[in-house]
Length: 275
Image 1 (cartoon, helix red, strand yellow):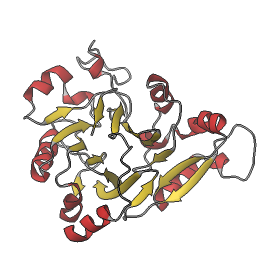
Image 2 (cartoon, rainbow, N blue to C red):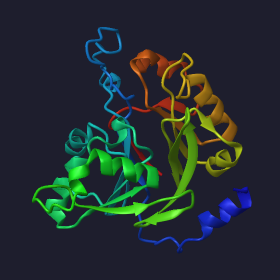
Image 3 (cartoon, one colour):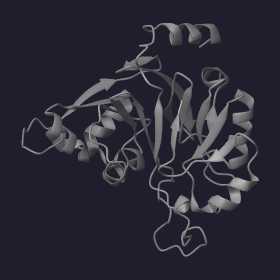
Image 4 (cartoon, helix red, strand yellow):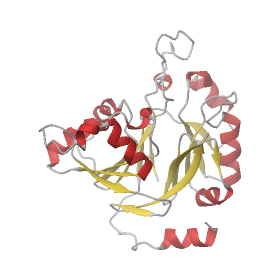
């Protein structure tokens, strides 16, 4: 997509509501697929007493006024909702179908019960098919009480609206697996990627806040390394970049934070931003 066309798609939305507050971002989890600490590991990161070295599986929550959505619902979804005392959730948007990003979907049942409404779920066709396999009992036609109630919405590589938020899909690759990142206003969120094409890079240029995966310092087959993520942040001239999907191999949060260049930080669970 050419940059001019992308800008037109961003602008093709209703005028902002003057009563809307700033967007609030909460990092629900910032860890890789095994989380930190990793089971049975005695390394200095996994045994650290620093709360910032305790990382649940990667997810982020976006609020604007009373509207609330979550990007991905991994295995720690229930724990994350309880920790942040989330009382209402309007939608879940999925990046891709790996288990560390979808496994907690069953726990939307609590929100179904409280609101009497199905949960709005936004996912690509491929991810939707994966959800139907993983949670077959939701889609079997059996109306057994207590199963999650979902309202599925198929997303493609074009902007779509979720409540007051215009979501711009960013198409990236996780080795050979297509994954969606998302931009909404000046916030861009990309996880599980090791390649972003020039056209997709144009969509995130100038973001005030960029969230980008950085697994570790050493080369990895399907994730950006620390140095690769820093290079991308500099190239798109992000205002501030927060790194996520971090493994225990990255090192201690406190030590690494001191090594990072200005404007680039390690995210941590529970971190809150306002944009």
